[in-house]
Image (cartoon, rainbow, N blue to C red; front, top):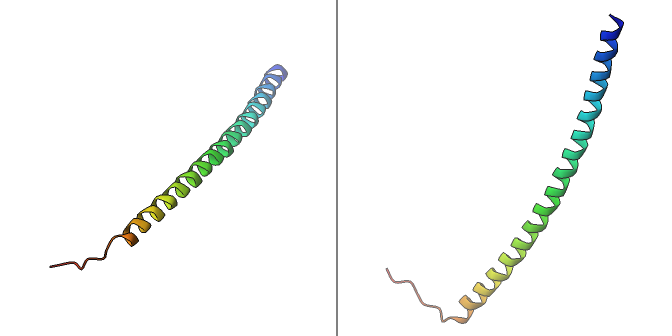
Amino acid sequence: MGLLRVRLTSFLVGFGVAGGLGMYQLRQDVLTSHEVLSRQADEYRSKLEKRVAQLESLVAKEPKQELQN
């Protein structure tokens, strides 16, 4: 019975260590992905703001016309 207990304990310790390392790696991957997505969102937002400013300046330059129904 003692050998079974040693093997079971060793298995559980190994499983716990592997699980802990796996969780650490997963956490690092999630943090890296979050940084990449955040950077991309900032770039897209700045491009969108520039485009909106360009469109607003074009609209301001055009003569205003009343809508006819």
